[in-house]
Image (cartoon, rainbow, N blue to C red; front, side, top):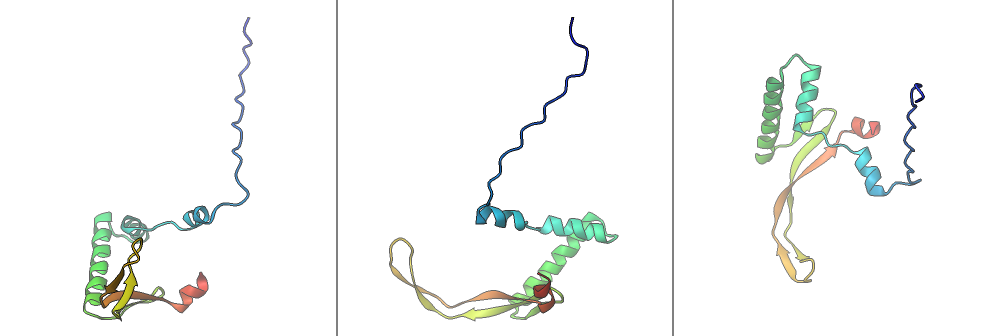
Length: 122
């Protein structure tokens, strides 16, 4: 006759974890990307806006920032930092793999300076 008692499940063995994680693994765990959908979701959760309205707000804010940067303006985001356009000088570089010298033309780049309060908080 079979034993009618409940069979107990054995807990799965815990996986051995290395004592030290690699720098890349630690960085990927520590840093998660917050994309546009994440921003929309958080804006929806913190306001009375619908998801569609929040998406429109995020799109509009990003478009205003992009247009201001295209016009050469500095964009200050209180509590976050300041975005501005900087000119880069023409310079000579080396093509990787071939060691061929190339001329890199002058251009523009966007720089970001973090707000002092945020820098202290990090």
